[in-house]
Length: 196
Image (tube, rainbow, N blue to C red; front, side, top):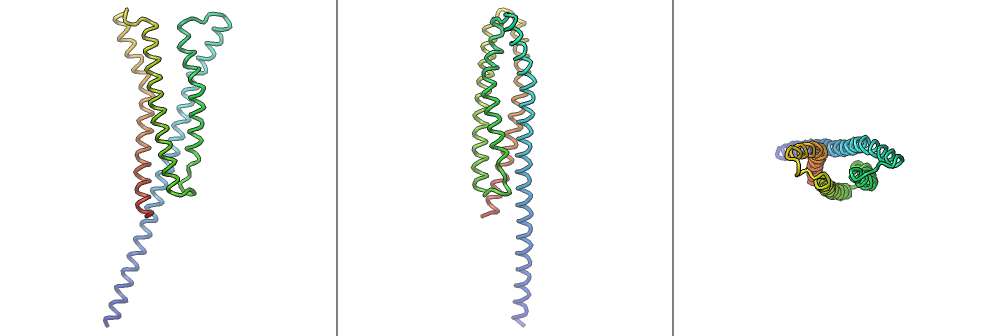
């Protein structure tokens, strides 16, 4: 009789363990899907950013080329020239980082490698955000001094409003990117715990 009870309890425990393993596998699959979805959203955001940059930079380059042909390039165009010069390596860097991000495949890579790659990506996004912000401030100060904005009291207010509006879009993109990265980090940590 004790042997029958032991068999029953063993079978119950065995069933519970099977159910737990099944639930863990489903949870791991769900977490992997979240990471993959966030990675795809980051890639889409980068493509969107490149399209916006192209919509701004291409007309600026055309206007500068026309100005060069007509020999009407002056000091005001220096800002556009500086922006275009820095835009080329920035777009090349963005293409490299997008390629790096697109090669992260959570289904095929070991979890440790995925974590390392996302850590690298986060570090690069942090550096490019800080560099972009520093460049933005530099251009803003350059234009402030070049246009002698302080000589016109209403000009200072208009200047501040215009530059704040220009800063809004990149700040919004950065906030979304870091929010996704935090979510990916949380999901990867959970996956690591389940994997152990």
